[in-house]
Image (cartoon, rainbow, N blue to C red; front, side, top):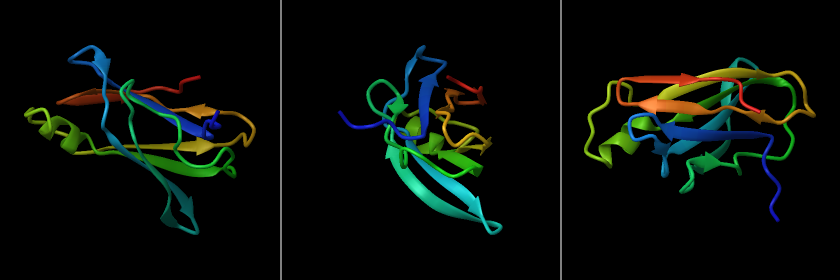
Length: 114
């Protein structure tokens, strides 16, 4: 069994009430004042990205970028937000970080998952 990455996400399409498969996600880290790429993934059929970088990351500031524009364009749905950026802090190098995204064409929200 493949280990789950330190940071995972789950994208839910709030309009459909279903997971959002096929959303491109990029994980970056803020290092020396610049954003550096850590990993890229695409959500699976359940809307999850479990393999988004290594099993452990150092403490620091990270960002997830979701390509929401491409997701909605593939479904023929116009959207106001072509991307969603979520910036968060990893302060416990041993704790798993789950950062979900609830998505609709004209709004999105997130919360600290478990």
